[in-house]
Image (cartoon, rainbow, N blue to C red):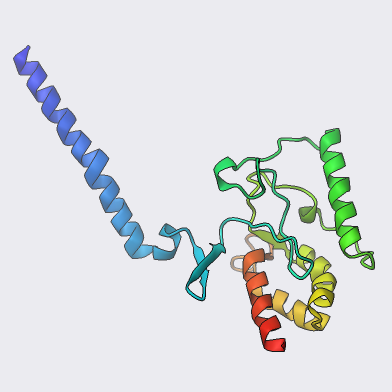
Amino acid sequence: MKTTFRPAIMLFGALTLVVGGLYPLAVTGIGYAAFPDQVRGSLVTQGGRTVGSRLIGQSFASPGYFWGRPSATAPMAYNAIASAGSNQGPLNPALMAAVQGRVAALRAADPGNTAPVPVDLVTASASGLDPEISLAAARYQAGRVARARTLPRERVEALIGATAILPLFGVFGEARVNVLALNLALDRAYTRAD
């Protein structure tokens, strides 16, 4: 029994040390050395203050800001701890009511805009944390943002183009814009316009 028990305890201790201690430390060290921004959560800082992450959406409610994709997380929007979709199918009456309410809110915020509302402004994603919207969704909001900030619409659309994330190699993915990056660029442009 002693001949079996002692090697088993020794092997358990060695594996615990390697797998539970040395391996995580090595992988974390490599991560910090090779991908320091990603390891720290892709945080965005401005003026020495953290204002968000490029990976997690935020709620912007002011008409002078671009609004992101709706969040289905609870108990509050863009809650990274409760990342989940609404799990409502396309025929679900609750989803239809939510979409109609979001369309009405967008129309009320910009009554002169008669363009079709892009789908990503009225439907939540699977994670509920999308930090990006399509270029169509950003352009749809450009007039409202320009009027709220008393900026020329062309200048706001130029900011959309400047912050656009293009498809990888021109093929993979869709053109999109990070809402936080766009709003920060807008704040910088608005400050310069004053």
